[in-house]
Image 1 (cartoon, one colour):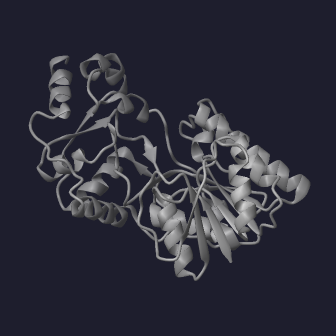
Image 2: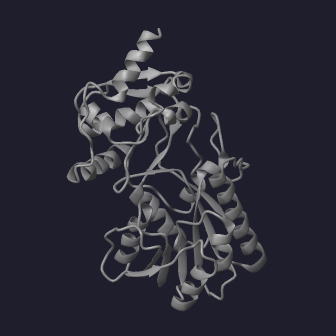
Length: 329
């Protein structure tokens, strides 16, 4: 089987490519040529720009893959030209996002839960989903949709109160406090990148996937306190953390407004639960293999090997924020 990966050079894509190659599949990666990533020998690179109308469809028609995994479709026009192209695909697996559910509070959305998109990104993903589901219903287009939650792993930094950031790992190692927004009970359901990739490969073949959406997240639903305790266990240190209310971050954003590293993310992170019902995909036989502690350990090892974890100090933004928080109380 020849599989085309649309956007396979950044984070999840390389893991998908490796797994497909290991299975003996012929793999082509379609991308703009702007991201450098080591891919297995024999993988064909096809340079396209999805924002140039007709370019993607023309390349696919020229190379005639048997199946497509789409990791970089954000707007309906990205997909429509592929759906309408003269291709005989056995499967089209599309990467959507659990962000389409919006603010879920304490619920556990399944695939029948109403989507509530607000941002341009969320609106675009829902429109893409609708296009594919209609194409399946009307024309039998073999689309399967994975609503991906919070992936993590090598090739990316880890999620922290300042966003994607690794400096907090050094703070943990040196016993310096990290900051957890609010009470630390907001849920997150991470999925290790190799498990996420395995799900896309799984959906490529399973006969019950076309015409359906599937939530894709890890096995563990972790309150933020447990999420950060997992990092501490993975690197073998006690968790030293302080909680600051999310509202305080909003009220004090001026303290870091001119800094690249800031706590703007913490102001919203504590409000957005990230936990989902994943029974639908599990019922077909898919199961994640990597627990969070093990996935974090692998990610930290990758960061260490490339010296990507910055050195912390007693004058990091955390220290200024903690001092300001204590002074205000």
